[in-house]
Length: 363
Image (cartoon, rainbow, N blue to C red; front, side):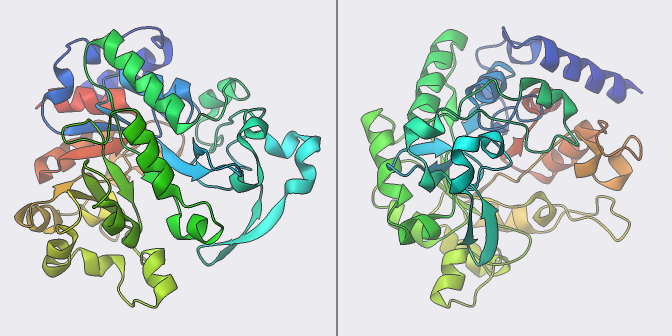
């Protein structure tokens, strides 16, 4: 009951204190205590993802880093969207002036129908407004539908600088290049533009509070010679990096996480971002099982471990940590986080940064 009460209190705080620093982030040095709290698409448990409002709320809740997923516009500007297809994260489907832009494309081997950032100039994209991606689970977030623009990477950098001054602690950025092979093949390569933005903002240097991440491998290896910030190799519980698939390389994500695979990753990356089930799997009943050897093996290879994604809704929690059969209700995210802190992870991607900060402070 104590944990449920604490969870409810933190959630209430999140929904009511957008305008100021929450109690969880009051200390200027809070961000450096223990593992990192990474605001996954901002504070997307409380605001539509990849909006400046979501990123700002994450920082005010105490997140150490805010995470923009990067895709390109038609005119080559990097913007923050989870995918290049934006039918589910903007109001484009309700805009008759863009009805003819709907198209079916092959995205990493899958046919997807919708509207695509690369078919819009930045000016056109700025006329759209963000909407909640999973309204069936996050009805509260739908209150904010239509209020926020699609931000550029530069706007995210500017926000992080402003909040760093205001909150008197560095707010890092943790950009992900989304579908780099896809964008390279249509002539909108993401990496040069990312390097340019970081360099122009004085962030392409050692000790800058920046990580760059990708689910692909070849682009990270190429970035190693162009960036002076740490790189993170993302992995999935199934499948393979698409650049491997595209080039005929038979290796899967699982191959990257063997001891030998991790040693290779360490030649170009600072850490890994695995799916959380790769760190602590679930048993046949859906409950948390014992940790795998991944954290120990990664640390032995000199790699940090930042698993994803920690969310408060029952739908995303292990069965033994759910509060009810309602997938949208909050369960015991504190319990899940505690298990991962104990497993030795170096940070967590979370939609609920306030809860992660509070959990981390409990030691």
